[in-house]
Length: 579
Ligand SMILES: Cc1cc2nc3c(=O)[nH]c(=O)nc-3n(C[C@H](O)[C@H](O)[C@H](O)COP(=O)(O)OP(=O)(O)OC[C@H]3O[C@@H](n4cnc5c(N)ncnc54)[C@H](O)[C@@H]3O)c2cc1C
Ligand SMILES: Cc1ncc(C[n+]2csc(CCOP(=O)(O)OP(=O)(O)O)c2C)c(N)n1
Ligand SMILES: [Mg+2]
Image (cartoon, rainbow, N blue to C red):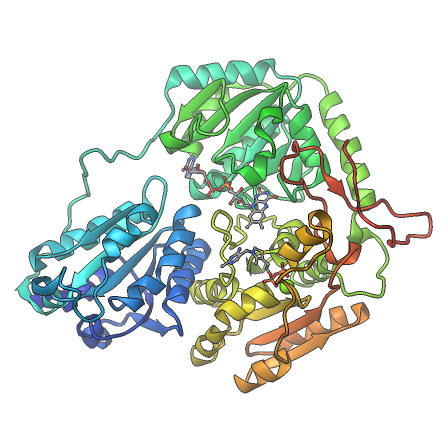
C-alpha cells in the first residue's frame, strides 16, 4: 500500500505499540501532524518542547515502554536538547522525532534550519537524518529497538519536510533488528562469574550497591534471592531506589553525598563491594582515593565502558544483571556469622536517633517531615517525580518504596524543571495511580507553564511545592561553605495560590507544620489536579539537607544533623563532624 512519509511515521508508531506522543507542532513537522487523527494515537500538546522530552522520559520510566516526543525544526528541535541530555544521563528510552527543512536546502541556513543530528550526537544513543522515504519504516523500527535494548537511551530521528511528503510503497518491517557491531550483553562470562562467587564466599563484610540497572534489567526478584541467600545488606543509589524493598531487614538506604550516614559507613568499612548495575557517579563515591579502601570490588554492568571507568575492580562482569545474578545464585553461600549485620544495625540505630522525622515538630514546616507525611498518607504506593535540589533529596530520603518502582528524578544531569513534565508523562502512563510531583520554587518556575498541559489533559496529579524562597540547594552550599553570602539565590516569588487559580487548579498553602496532614488529605480527596505550597524553613538547621558529604571529603566524612538534646531541641547550629 502507498503511504506518505508522514503516514509511515504513524503506521510505524502503531506497529511499535505507541499510545501517546508528547509534542509541539510547527512548519517543518506539520505535514507529519496532519494524518495523526487517522491513527488513534493520543497527542499531548505541551507548552515547551523541553517538556515533551521530559514527559516522554517520565512516561518511559513509569511504564517501562519507550516514550515519544515530537517537535519542529530549528527552535523546536533545540528546545528538546535538555530533555534528551537528561534521558541520556539516566538511560531513559525515548524516541524524538523532529521536522527538518527540505533536503534540497539543508546546509543553506534555511528558515528554522538547525543541525539537530550534529547537536545531539553526544547526547543520543543514536540519531538519524532520513533522506529517502524508502528508509523511513526501517529507521523507525531500528530506533525503537536501539532505544529500549541493552543500556536504554534516547534516539532522535530528523525528518526533512520532503521526506514527510514523499510517497512510497509501505512495507512494515517484520524481521528482528540485527545491527552490525551492536550486541547487547547477555549472561556474564562464566569464569568471571566463578571468580566473583569465590570473592563473595570469602567475604566477611560484604555490601551490595544496587543501581538503576536492577530495575532496568528486571532483576528485583533475583536481587532479593541473592541478598537473602548470602545475607548481604543492600545499599542503593538514587536511581536504584525501588529495586529492593526498602522495609526489608537487609535494606540499608541511599548511599552517597546525601545518603544515610550509616550506609556510607557500611560501604567504607566493607571488605567486598558488589556493584550491581550502577556506575559509581561522583555523588556516590565521594573522594575516590579513600573510597571503600579495605574492600575487594565486583562490578556487574551491561555497558563495557562503565567497567573500570571510575573505580578499578577485582572482578568486572560484562552482562545483563538479571542473568548474571541467576548465574551467581547457585554458586554463593551465606556469609558466616551475624557479626557484620549486627554492626551495621548498631550504626543504623545511631542514624535513626538523629533522624528529624523521629523528633517533635518545631515551629517550621520542614521538608523531611512533609515527605514523610506524604509517604504515610499514600502507603508508599504513589509514583513520585521530583525536581532537583533540596526537594529532590528529601523525596529520595523519606519516600520509601517496597514495590518495584523507580523514583522518577533527574539524577545524572540534575535538570531543574524536570519534576512537573515528568509527572505529566507518568500520570499518562499510569492513569489509575496516584502521582505526586515534588518540586522546589526555583525548578517549578522553569517549567510551570506545563500547568496548561495538566488542565488541557485533565490530569489529576498532585504537586508538592517546597517554597523556601531560595534556590535552596545552592543556598545551602553558600551557608555552609561560602560564608553565608547568598549570592543570586534569593527568589522573589509570585503568589503561587493565584498562579494555580489562574489555571483553574486547586491550591493549599501550608505555613504551620500542624496543617500538613490535613492539606495532604484534602489534596488527595480532590478529584482534579492539586498543588500544595509548603512554606518550608528558608535556612539553617531546619532548612538544610542532612547528612552531606562536603566536596573533596571521603564518603564517611559527613556533615551530620546535630543529635537531639534531651529536650528534643533542634536549635544547635550544624557542625562538621569527621567520623
Ligand atoms: C542534587 C543531586 C544530588 C544527588 N545525590 C545523590 C546521592 O546522595 N546518592 C546517589 O546515589 N545519587 C545521588 N544523585 C544522583 C547521581 O548523580 C546519579 O544519577 C546516580 O547515583 C546514578 O545512579 P545509578 O548509577 O544507579 O544509575 P545510572 O546512572 O542510570 O546507571 C545505571 C548503570 O546500570 C547499567 N545497566 C543498565 N541496564 C543494565 C542491565 N540490564 N544489567 C546490568 N547493568 C545495567 C548502566 O550501564 C549504568 O552503568 C544526586 C543527584 C543530584 C541532582
Ligand atoms: C537547569 C538547572 N540550572 C541550575 C542548576 C543548579 N542547581 C541545582 S539545585 C539548584 C537550586 C534549586 O532550587 P529550587 O528549585 O528552589 O529547589 P530547592 O533546592 O530550594 O528545594 C540549582 C540552581 C540545575 N541543577 N539545573
Ligand atoms: Mg527553593
